[in-house]
Structures are given as C-alpha cells and as structure tokens.
Image (cartoon, rainbow, N blue to C red):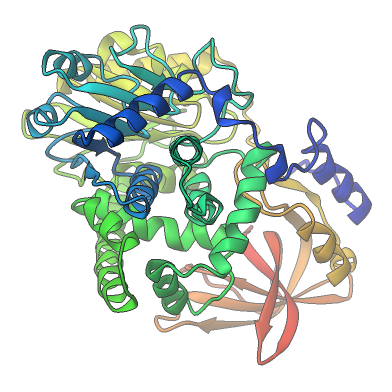
Amino acid sequence: MPYPTVTPNQLEKKLKSRFDKEGFLSLSNLPHPSTFKDMEKATHRVVQAIHRGEKIVLIGDYDVDGVISTTLMRLFFDEIGVKLEWIIPNRFRDGYGLSTSIIPRIVDYDLAITVDNGISAVDASLLCEQHNIDLIITDHHLLPKVLPTAYAIIDQKQEDCSFPYDEVCGAQIAWYLISSLKKALNATVDTKSYLALVSIAIIADMMPLKHINRAMVLAGLQLLRRSNLPAIKAFKEKLDKELFTSEDIGFQIAPVLNSAGRMEDAKYAVDFLLSDNIYDARIRLDRLVEFNDNRKAVEQTITKEALEQVNPNDKVIVVNGNGWHEGVVGIVAARVGRIYEKPTIVLTQSENGDLKGSGRSFHECNLFKVTQGCRELLTKFGGHHSAIGLSLPFENLEPFRKKLQLNYLAERYSEVNLDPDIVGELSFSHISFELINMMKQYEPYGQDNPRPKFITKNVLIEDVNKMGKTKEHRRFTFSHNGTLQQAVLFKTQESFRVGQQVTIIYTLNENRFNNRVTIQLMIERVL
C-alpha cells in the first residue's frame, strides 16, 4: 500500500495544517445569536407567547441531535418556569420530523417550535397555518427548493443568513435560540452549562470538529466532567469514567441514546436526560442499554444475512431483505461497507411491498451524487455525501442496482482505495509519550479531524493471547526493527501465530492500569 513514511515532525505539520484557516477558536469567538436570519424575530415571538400565557409545543427528532435539542429546550423552559410540551415523532408510526401525521396532536397550541427538523415540512406547515398555529422552524439541514410557510426559519444554510459557519448541528442552533431568549427575558440561567449536552450532539451528528464546533466540544467535555445532571452521573457510573473523550461519546454514549429511537421510541432517551434524580436515571439508563443490546443483536443477524447476498464484483453494494429492522439498516450498511471497502446500500421490504433503506459511502465516493443519478427510480431520497436514505418500488430494484454501477464508473473513482485517515507509515522507534502528548494538542478528534491512524509493515508477532469473556479479543506483543510494542485487537475470529510477519493499521492510546500508564496500539486491521 503506497502510504508515505511519517516522522513525528511531519505528523505535527499535518495535524497543524487541518487548522490553517482559523486556528484554535475559543468560546469568546462564538458569533452573536443575531447573526442567524430570523433569530430576533423568533425570539420576539416566543417572548410574546410566554408573556401572554400561550400554549407552546416543541417538535424534535428521534436521533441524538434531536433528543439533545429537545432536552435543552425543555431544561431552559423548566428553569424559567414556563410550561413547554414536547413531541418526538416515532420513527415507525410518524416518520421524520414535523409531518402531517403530527398536526392533529398540536391543533390546540398557539405556537409550535421545531428543533433539528422542519426545513422540509412544507405540507405540515400549511396545516399549521390553517389551524392558526404560528410555526418557528429551527433546523440545520439542506434547504429544499420550496421552503415551508413559517413565522420564522432559523437555518444557517439560508443564503441570506449571516451566521458564518455552515456545518453546525440542530442542538447548537437550539442553544443559540436559548441564549437569545435568556437575554430577551433577562433570565438568570447558566446557558454555558448546557454545552455539556451540546457537545454530545455535535459529536453524535458528526459535525466537523473545527472552528466553533471544536471550541464548544472542548468546553462541553470539561463541563461534562463536573456536570450535576443525574443522567450524566449515571453514564459515569455505567462507564466507570469521570472524564469523557470524544471517542467515549461517539462509540459508547451516542449509540445508547440513539438506540431508543432506533428500536422503539426516542422519548425514552429524553426522559432519561431529564431525570430528576440518580435513581430514576439509573433505571432509565438500564432501559436504554437494553435497547442498545437488542439493537446490536438485531444488527448482527441482519449483517450476517446481508453479507450472504453481496456481489463482490459490484462497485456499489446493494442488498435487500424482507422485514429487516428499519432502525438498524444504516448501521448494517456501514458494517458491510467496511468489510468490502465499498459504498453500500441496505434495503428492507415494507408491508406494502416497497423497499426502504439507507446507504453509507466509503472513502472518496459521493454516494449522494451517485444515487441522485437514479432519482427517477426512487420514490423518496435524501442525505449527503456519505449517508443517504431512500425508498423505491420493488420492481425498480434491478434497474436501480445496474444504474448505480454505471453512475459510479462515470465518476471515475480511484481503484486504489487508500484510507484517508492513515497519515503514513510509522516506525515503532518513533512511538513515544512525547508523540502522544503532541497529538493531544489537536484533540478532540472526530469528523474532519480524525485521530491519526498509522500503518507499519514487517511487524513480527512475538506473543498473542485471547482475552474477554467470550475470548473474541486479542492482546499482542509486536516487534518492529527490534522495538517492542503492546497492542489490542477487538472482536476478531482470525487466528494468529507467534512468529507471523504482518502489516498492522492502528491508532495510539495511553493504557491506564494499576496506577501505571503505558502506550498501547489499538489495532484496526492485521494484514
């Protein structure tokens, strides 16, 4: 694999170049709420509703960003002593966001506010108008050709919006609305403390960890450390951690919060985050963990069935099943895609016979663009570069599959699928605490600022042992040009032997055990 060699100095230059445009920002660099189009208009209307004692309802979304956005708004309204009802649509019964199916439940309200959704709710917005419900939309997604009818629309992607950052999540916009309301109401609310939850949403919604996003996440991680929210305390107990990293949020906290909406109903996740005491929080977290365990089991079964269908010659993998769980097909697409190193679409057949599902891209492929070229075969389609959602009639499946392959070939993507997160070939002699401390300066790692991944060839397995309850993990001692390093590989059925020469792809980690800190390689693949 043609990766360049990399030294610590070269690595630092690469990491620094990720922030060439703006450098490291702090909370003092946050733009003013008024830079959002319609922010002042929305703020005035909410304040008016509060003073008049009008009935206000909030409509959220069932992913982590929507759950956090809903929680933030409810926390703020509780603190100022104003009643706020909230609804999170059920993925299976209601579909996404402010849909026409939600309207009968809000006809008695004077003001409806959306968080993390609403920008595509054209039909539902007209029904709100018919029922004399003023609608304020706060969203961060791409704008459709026709905008909904609303009293105010706060979405940074509007052309005439002066907010300087394009990629922010729904919870950040909800936080900005809260900040604007706090000032207008002259309320004594510590809105900075809300950044603890906002940081979870930024990471879970895969926002680029640069500019103000990085500043908000860094502040949020520190605030999580001293948060008094029972839900956060329950997570600390469950994970046996006082300090969360961005990886902890991305791989352990976000999936648990997401699982309620995927498997049953996202209201369970909001109820957990709004827990009044640690006892309720523990019970509610156990329920979410149960949802997540169920999600893992269902996902494992579907992944196995999906892999049996794969045509390895396809440039874009398309698999479908009857009755596959709609809430996990996106995760299955990501898993299958990683195994075959190809963009993948996983579809499930619904009761009416149509196919519905999700796709995940791989490396440089713009799956949205490739699939957009098949629009005439689809009934619904949306998403972005790396993730899509779609539905189509069953009879269009084969024409869709064939056209996808042609569209992919027309884009002339490279046949050499280099992993863009691998910064280069690293010698074990360069691995040190000095290197790790230098890398810490560029945390938190995540979207658009990935944790540096390395490749090392001609590595000798000096020792290998099974570990874990089910013996599915491996602990290694590797040597490379006379230098030894300890390493772990999680979830593998592969067999390894002492004396075997391999190529490894890995990240670096500090392992803390018995008050001792050692360097550990976190192995992604052994080749």
